[in-house]
Every structure is written in C-alpha cells, then in structure tokens.
Length: 233
Image (cartoon, rainbow, N blue to C red; front, side):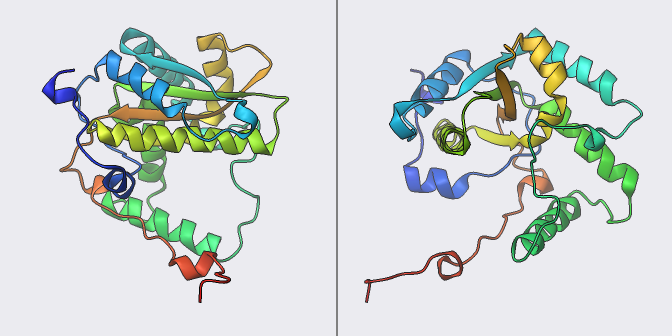
C-alpha cells in the first residue's frame, strides 16, 4: 500500500468528519481502494448474517455512459416527478422531522447561493445528483424484493460502514436516494435482475474542501431528544 493510500484517521474522527459531499474534485480513485472499501464494509451488522446488499460499482467510461443517458432523460423536465419503487419520505412529514428537513434544505441552498424562490436554480442543483456531483466512482445499492424492513435496515448499516471507512482513505461519499427515481434506466444499464430493487446510489471521491456546500455541518439533535435513559443514575 502506498503512503497516499494509507489509512489516516481513527474511527471517532471518521464518524465525526463524514459529510454528504455535494462537490467532488476531478480526481480519480484507485480501483484497489474501492474494492477494499466494498469488502471491508461487509463487516457491517447483518441480522442472521444474511448480508442482503447487492452492489453495482461504476467508474470511467461505464459511468460516463450512464450519466449521459440520464442527462438526456432529465433534459428539459423535472425528474423529481419520476416515480420510485418505494416511498423515500412519508407523504406528509411531521415534527420534529419536518423542521429538521426544511432547515437542512435552507442550509444547503444557502451555501450554494440559491434563493428559496429560484425554482430553476434549485432544479438545476437537483439534477447535479444525476452527475454524482462530479464524483469519479458511483455505487448502486440494491436489495431482493422479497426482503423486508429488517434487511433494508442492514443496507443502511452497510452504507454507513462504507462511508466511515472511506474517510479512512481521505475519501468522501454522498448517499443519494434521488437515484431511486432512475431505477428503470439504472436497472437496464447494469442488467439488474427483476427480483432486485434499486435502493439508492453512493458517490465516492475526493471532497472539494474549498466549496461552500462542503463547509456546512448539519446539526444533530441532543442525545436527550431521542434517548430515554433508565438505570443510569
């Protein structure tokens, strides 16, 4: 392993420094690192050791081809109206989750200098999802349709393990449920079997540390807001 590829931080720093990166440098990622991350992330907790994740990894010409197809599909239209095979969010959000989500949107678009009433700029930014924010590596995470919520939870565990391990290599990630709207195009492109469902995509690359959108830090609730402690007195 070269010095550039050495693991560079402990687990606490990796978790604390993880962000959803929305602007990547035009810098390739060593394919060996990608393979290593995918292998190591499989140590994520999995009920019954089922390991339900199915992954399609793209880079180079393959990724460029897919992005071109999706760009043609979303040109001149709003892909936020495309259907997904599962509900990404409940149809009506409630508190405190509604406020958290709205505040996050304000943070992101504010960092990008996009006004709340600038519908075109907001749509253009959404479409950048489908270019993976310039990341050189894209993963598509799928799951067998016969699995239930417990196995879907395992997918989340795998994705987070991957994100934290990526920080160890100085890489960043962006989980993107927006890609669920492109399930038909992605499924055909990667030859996904019909028994599998696309859950999300994950962009992997090197963060542009100078870009304002990567400088924001999403707030997190205090532990007493979501945890009831008993017997700790």
